[in-house]
Image 1 (tube, rainbow, N blue to C red):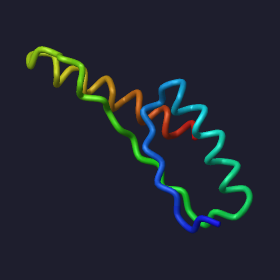
Image 2 (cartoon, rainbow, N blue to C red; image 1 turned 180 degrees about the vertical axis):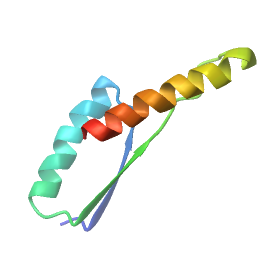
Image 3 (cartoon, one colour; image 1 turned 45 degrees about the vertical axis):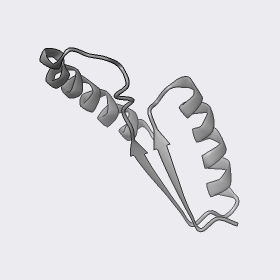
Amino acid sequence: MYKKIFFPADFSEVSKKALAHIKKLKAVGAEEVVVFHVIDDRTQLPLAYIETVHAQQKEEAKKNMAAL
């Protein structure tokens, strides 16, 4: 069984489905699950908006992480 699982979460629908599987692995004996938030920076945002968008994403990530 896995000792440590690293789970990159972007809180997309796919990520939420994967989280359900991660929870099952934890329930059957994984010792530790490390969840970290990732942001897809492939969106071509103008530089003027990056700080605003980043602040919004950070707040949303805090809420999502707290809900885990």
